[in-house]
Image: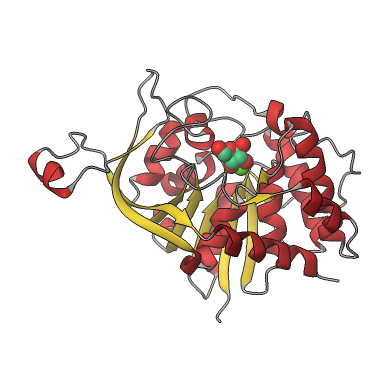
Length: 317
Ligand code: BDR
Ligand code: CA
């Protein structure tokens, strides 16, 4: 299998950490770089967390760039109640000695996409502020993105609000720009996000492993379960990375999608037109700004879980 050249955009975040570990360790992924954005916590904390995850993965010199400090129009609204005061489980890990890339997130995206000999898959698992800014700042480079597989949105209920998923709700204007960009988009949203779970028993097995990545993942899972008092917990953002390299594990449907950027109760909702074809023909969506989006509606839960577990247990050492 050819390697998939990939860039992650993250707001690390416990489940972002699951995604970064996997992308850094999986042999079929060529992880070109990581861009960080304000989301689960402030962007400086996101950068610090991401560098620590790369340490745990034993990753090589993968560039990590600092991105947007706030949404395009709204105010930052952090999820520390879910992810901890440091945004990543409050494990008390010493800071990484890795250096942050001196380029901004949009500059790093431009350079990596322009410099790649292979098509680049962009996997944002965070609010879409960096990606929207990149699309606007460097439209010619943006045309070279092979595709975007993003964690965000929902064709059903929300989580941040009744209607909206956190990443889209945090910066709906950015999400609207990305969805309307014309880049092929696969949306890994809340319809499937919670389903591949990991238990406290599995966390203990990981902690007892000899691979540092597995030990780190086990500690994160344990802290997350203690904080939220639920087991299993979701592997979350990792699912979007899995969907990018193992599409056979996922079932998708094409929908016309509109991001609600109003200030009403549906702000941040991804309205997916799931009506029967004959109704759509009778009365189109009624909104000019819809985009055709491939939405993940089902998945092989055990296949996805095992993909993550096997990759993390193997480690790099
Ligand atoms: C998304 O919000 C964040 O808290 C998670 O990291 C994930 O990207 C889920 O709505
Ligand atoms: Ca995230």
